[in-house]
Amino acid sequence: MESIKTAARRRTARAGWTMTREDWMTSITRRGLLAGAGAMLAAPVLTPAWAQSGYPGGRVVTIVVPFAAGGTTDLLGRIVADRLSARLNGKFIVENRVGAGGNTGAAGVARSDPDGYTLTLGTVSSHAINPAVYSKMPYDHIKDFAPISQLASVPNILMVNLDLPAKTVPELIELLKKNPGKYSFGSSGAGTSTHMAAELFKVSTGTDMVHVPYRSSGQVTQDLLSGQIQITFDNITIAWPHVEAGKIRALATATPKRLAVAPDLPALSEFIPGYDASSWHGFFAPSKVPPEIVAK
View 1 (tube, rainbow, N blue to C red):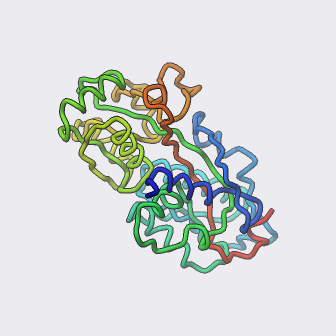
View 2: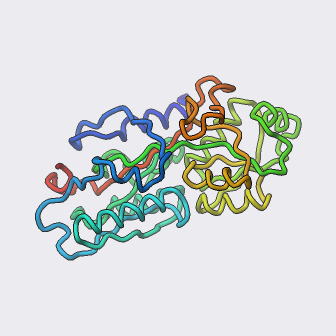
């Protein structure tokens, strides 16, 4: 039977990026959102593919974020909306449609009018992981969407509450093995990349933790700070300020190699060969949007 990890990677490849709708690429560029979302959004890749004459023509364009406010996807969506509003002299707004690990928001966009006025920020959760873990999906992650652009590949990091008596990955593994089911980890929702990162860690190390799902990574961070949960994986964009402030302890990155922004922080692959739980974000429209709107 195909594992969740393998299935998600296969679906990630299928939901890749290309210049046409029919022939999507099978590789995802691994770029960390290391210098901040604003710097990333200055990249040429975000020049609107659908910037044809007259668009948006005074109409409001809704960017659906399928997760709650306060997380990386929400942050990215709001920056995109601001940039596109300025570039196209229009009004792009963010609407958070939360539920089912991103499925609710994505399904709404898939069913919307394909006129370019309803778009979405898809993630590795909504377009790769969920099709691997949900037995019935409310949309087809390949057929129901037209990819516009990849926005970012965001590193996840493993963090713990300061009161947890584990200062390294080996110490955390030893602590969890001695206390199966005692400690809890938070995620931004069942089936999200942060949830799967922790599940992959559990399977790879033979440890057991209790999963506590939240509606956003911002809520996860708050409960990690207060000690309501002890462990989490989260996007570096949300977590790193708290790490730098000494309020949360970072143990490792969930990437194959160390990050340039944190060279002293080990990669989990140094302890678990082959471990990789990076997250990506992409810009999508409904699949039947006219080609002239999607293509440059």
